[in-house]
Length: 192
Image (cartoon, rainbow, N blue to C red; front, side):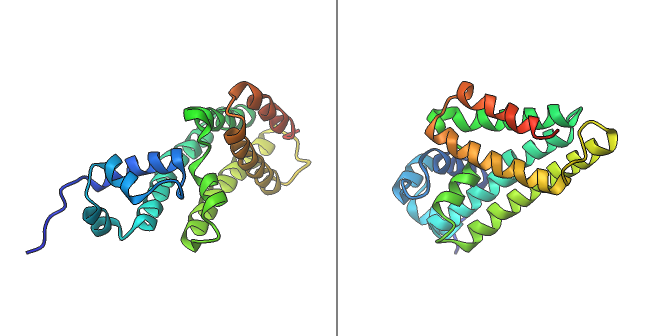
């Protein structure tokens, strides 16, 4: 008779996400995970296959919760400049928390892409979703006359995503909102 799972897998994935986000993939051992999640090694392997499977589940959880919330907030912003400024400064605020843990997706890009093509796909999907959401906000802003039409909205959106990625890497080096937030103003000024 098969044993039933004795833990909440969604809660375990959320807790694993926090641990991977704070420590990184390489610095997080299976033992760290089992202790942090309060489950046995057999349960971890049964539910997720291995550490890689749990990491992919944690990254997907990040995509569907925090990354998705950032996009919703962006789309609900009043005007393009304010919405983009708020989105960028909020991402900086989250990234500098916990002594500069950065962004789980950007961390994954820096740490795991060469080893795991599925991580590449997940991170690329997040980047594409961010770029597409920004491009739509910018397209509407051009139509309303809020920003100049001197740049293609997709190109400008790609620039903002690239800028944000660099800013999030910088947040790990200098986890100081007051040092990073003025850079957001430079990016917002690029909107024209």
